Image (cartoon, rainbow, N blue to C red; front, top):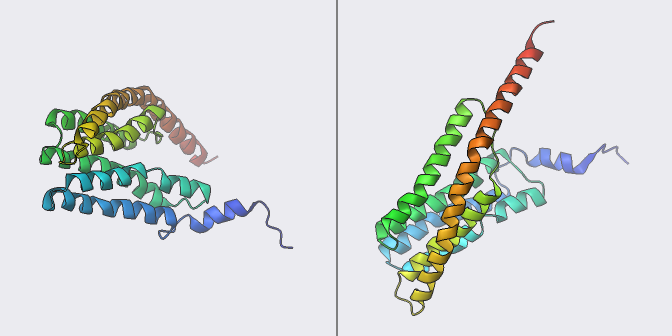
Length: 214
């Protein structure tokens, strides 16, 4: 028997590391492809109820690609890029679209997207300064998951289906705490960013020390 050394899992990760055509990446791309269909439903077909169901489905499956990648060790560099990009695009494009459509008030759109813009700018600044990457906090995951349901519910609540009022109330009940959680998570990123910046500088100092001639 050949000596595998350790390990099949490590070899498997190496095999898939730089691949694009993996199941998780396909799931992310399919979710991303749902955005133009959503826009077509809401603006061309004026089918708010159908658009709400599609948006809810695409949003509710945001965990599937990441879970599959970790479960079957098919993490790839492309996946690390496309997964969070898809999550943000689904949320931001959808929220802006329902604001334009008039399904939700603009003040809610502005409050929600302002937080996303602040966090995105903070991440860019942190990266430019050499800070380490910050993982999404628990509060951030809860907020995103809640918003993925709140806005489709509000969109369905603005449709002409018989249970539209139920969707509208449910949407607001979910939206309020989700927004609170989203800003709590944004506040958490401040000390986390300072720590990540400190660690990044330490890493660069250690690398520089190792590169110095002896």
